[in-house]
Image (cartoon, rainbow, N blue to C red):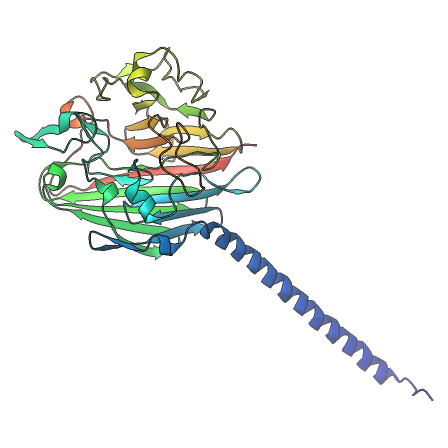
Length: 399
């Protein structure tokens, strides 16, 4: 015989059902939260699984080499202290797919043995070329090792790309590299103390801040030599990338890529990127300067168009996935290099080789061979002074 249902019994039953539903809802929410966390971790691990710390764990010149990450939700950068360099840089494309826009290798050994030593590296003491490796300071001539034809390039035979930097990571978004270059290293005078801070921001930018001090009069021109393909590493040619450069002049070069000293107007030449053009649109034109550079490998004189309180170097757009890169700097010039000497001899982390013109560089800088051209902005650093310069690569998308 069924028990008689009282108001009290009904109340208890309703309460019990409510509690059971709440417990079930909480479990489902916890499951969803765990799944979201797992998805986020999977995304993070998915990027980091491209690179293994063990493949960078080695010793060079008695110093430990490692792999480091700086990141937030919209940009992730892998770096190594061998050469203070960018190994890879991931940003979302127009479909939200994280895309590696900086070419590099998946091990320290890849960078050490590469026939192209500058991929992603911090460059110094003096970026770009010095004619015949000679310059004078205070009446004394200095000689830098020749490593590029009859000239010196990017600091001599063992520039900053080949040293192991001390590293600190104050937070998840910042890496600080430090190196003390001894007096007369690669022929440069003065004990030079260098600090480079790389950081990522919430608006998809990597910020590079270079600092240096010396105890003797010396010359300094620091930069970063990341090679970019905005379609993604391994995606082929960069000739269809669209480029705008805020430069009304450039510095013509001789056959050894040493500036003649002239500041030539870009108007009416294949060097006019004041309006958008693809890299490949005029690269094969009959032009002595393109012949000397094997394409674009020239310093552009920035016209001081401002963005974010700095010189706006330019805007580059990937032709396939809509990734846009804006470059800003406190420097007066930029070296635009179209990958003319890439020879397919090295294999990147994506498994493809560094084939001809599959990456480009925009190296913010003072002008090449500045110590031998008094009319150029000078790069002399005196004791008691501090060299400081800042450059930014910022990424967005165009649909």
